[in-house]
Structures are given as C-alpha cells and as structure tokens.
Amino acid sequence: MLIAFAVFVVLLSALVHPWFAVTRTSGERVLVAEGWMHEEGLRETARLFREGGYERLCLTGTVRPFAYYLLKDDSIHFVLKAPASGQVLLGVGGLPGAEWSLWLDGRMVLRGVAEGAVKEHRVNVPAPGFSSGALVFTAPAAPGPEVPVGFVARFTVEGTNVHELVGQVTIHQGDGGRREGQPTYAEQGRDRLVRDGIPYDQITAVPTIDVEGSRTWSSARSFTAYARSAGIDRFDVATLGVHARRSWKMYRKAWGSDAGVGIVALDDPWCRRWSWWTNYYGWYQMTKELVALPAPYLVSGPEGDEAP
Image (cartoon, rainbow, N blue to C red):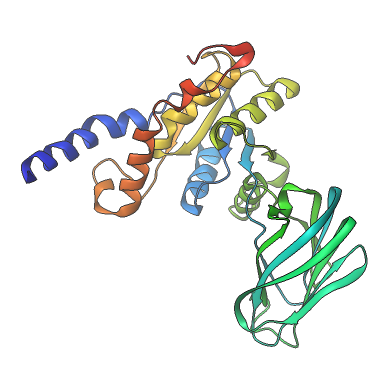
C-alpha cells in the first residue's frame, strides 16, 4: 500500500502537476492577473510585469467579504446602487476603547465600544430603506501611525454582502486623505500591486459582481468583454501554479477562440512540483484541480460554443 501511494505521488508530480501548471505566452504586452491570489502570487505578478516586457496590467476579481482594517479616525463611506432595507448585521472589533458608529442616510443607527474580538450587532431598517452611509472609528490613541484601531469583519443587509449592493466605497482617512474601497478582489489586488511598486495608472481593475457558473468563468467573461471594448486582441493570463490549466481553458472559451490567449503559471511556494504533497495546501490545490477538470465543459461560451 505504501509503495502504491508513493508511485501515485510520483506520477502526479512528474506528469499531472506540470500539465496543470502550464505556461504558453501570446507574445502580447497585456497581462491579466487574478486578483484573488495570495500575497506571494501577487508579488510574483509584479515581478512578471516588470521583467516580462508588459506595458498594461489588468486585475480581475469577484466580490470579496466586507472586511477592512481602519486606522485612527478612519471611516468607510458607501453609496448603494439602490435603496436597501431589512436586518442590518455588522461584525466589528478593534482595540479596547475604540469607539465606532454606523450612520445610514445621515442618521446614527448603531454605536459601540470595541472590546478586542469581533462582535456582531444588528438593527432593523424598515422600508423604504437607506441609500448611503458611513462607519466611523475614533480612538483616543493608537500604538503607532500604521496600527489599525478597528476591524470590520462583515456587513450585510438581509444576509447580502453590502459589497454586492454598493455603487461606490471610499475610505476617508484620519489624516485627511482618501482612498478607494475594495468591493472586489480586483481592487484589492490592485492595491497590493501598487504597494509592490507598479504604477497605479498602469493597472486596470476589471471587477465581477455577479457570479455565474464559477468565479473563474465569470471573471473570464467580464475581462473578455472589457478587452473587446478596449481594443485588446491578445493577452496573457497569470494565475497560481496548478490553477493555470483551468483558467486558460475558461478564458479561451469566454474569448471564443484559442488564438490570442496566453497563460503563465506563477510560482506557488506551497504547491511546487516536487514538494506539494508535504503540506495541506498543496493537497488541497491539486485535488481541487483534479475535481474541477470537467468545469470548462459545463459552461456555455459565446453563442453557445463548445469548450476548446
């Protein structure tokens, strides 16, 4: 049994892993990266962009949890696409003594004092509901200028993530500055890449709010629609290691053709060819890709085309 297991692992490492972690570039200077990747993957994306001769970087991503760290006197301001009503749930924590308050359409509906761990708070907002609001954090002091005093873990209305409802999210900083919120992993990934030294004006966030079929497929459809409108006819997709094969198929199917769509498998330090079996993450990634092999054939491409 042990010998059979060892043979199985060797075959997966020697044959299946490199088949999943495929790299075939298109020769174009447009790079598309999946914003959900962990920090190491995004750091590899920044390196690839700088060293690979690319001139334009697009970040895809679906809706992320309403989660933010806030510094002293920071506040989150949001405007909804349409009025919302019902039970509002706010999960918030922070440094003991930090005060917070939730304002909806200029009226304070919740307030409290952080006690460390995240706690949930609820309030019912009757129809016609609210269209905008703000979550404000204040604290008498902070341990340091870049040390968060508060943390928002979740924010929902009738069980729906507020990030799915917003038209705009802005962080008003205590020092008077402002920065964009991160309703999707596209904006979150862009923020991380800017911190890695990629100029903001070279990065385009291409978010996906509605997911149909799978996150990869939905992001591929959003990007290919954007690419056509922006005059992009060739591009490379960068993603983590063994996820490359599936992403490549999904983007080619959404594009409607194999031509012009390249793929780059970024180094995934916890799922490398000869060491992925040494940790849980490696087994999870390999198993997920094996199970998801049929996924590209279960979605419909442009005009119902079959998967390439």
